Length: 434
Image 1: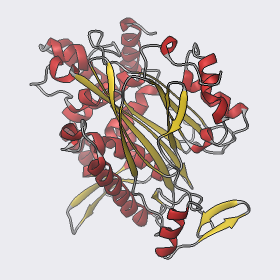
Image 2 (image 1 turned 120 degrees about the vertical axis):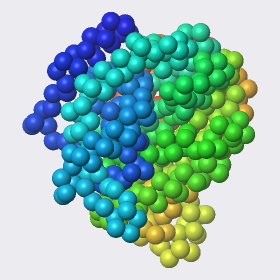
Image 3 (image 1 turned 30 degrees about the vertical axis):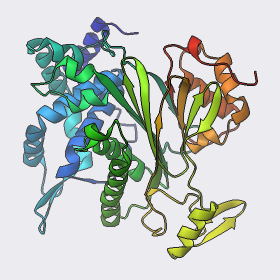
Image 4 (image 1 turned 135 degrees about the vertical axis):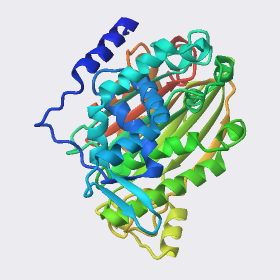
């Protein structure tokens, strides 16, 4: 575990030397344009990625990215507008909407990373509100006075695939994010309860769609104006609205840039109050799944969207598509193996509408697992809870599970998020048949 001085040393090193780019390293190619409405989310995720790639902890990278993207948003727009060449900047004459070149945005943020870190450290030193300072500018991952901290593990591997098309997104403290840098916020406002978002995105036919959806969908959900009011009831309307909104925006971009990729997703939002998990909201689209272990027994909270499912097959055929068995795999229009996804603009019968469920938690839940199909299709479900119980002292449970799936023969990208719903691993239930 890194200390305050370790983090300061890393940040000061980045201030003095910036981010050194390996010119021989092939940079990923994503969608080329970013419009005004997308800019803040893009900046947040790009800064987070730049810092985590330089050994800055993910949660600390997020705090720095949130701060800079929120406080200096107008300055970013001004700087980009001044520095962009005519070929890098386009104006939509009908809507007068400004679009920025994404590659240029990445270079701009990479070149200004020293200033970004300096601003955060200066704000940290000068901030008078100690409550906000202890939460938003702390080198501690957790608020030590809160009982609402969440223990989770995340791990991903490219495995034997040529490219990595999985993404994960974690917002450990949604309330902290949404109160970020508001002068009238207090630690009491933020720490009464804690909601956390965990998401896995599994791309196919390229990385454009999975990069876009993993960047924008979580932020659209947690910054929805009704999110705070509905977190204690249900998030159905918010999930439906944001899934549709993000898919529509990407599809518009995909048509302009001839992007053919798609992605599936599964999202879990957990709420914890007074040290007890009280609510779980889940939404999914495609074949990524969420499993909940309660009293040592695994139950799937999500059902995969595959074309061989009768209700999905009927919907696809009613929409003018076809479902056929191609060499042992059921596919839409002879190609796509999922019946719901984001993107995939050539498949009009494939929809992004999520299925949604809510669960009241009663304290008997042990842990929650989010995984892509590369994980779930390669593990022995009957043995899974036993193996986790026997290896509950693993340093990173998600890493252990990813390696377990790989050893079981998975050649696909593998991504896992493991969320502990007990105070510690000693409290999880032993499997029913152990």
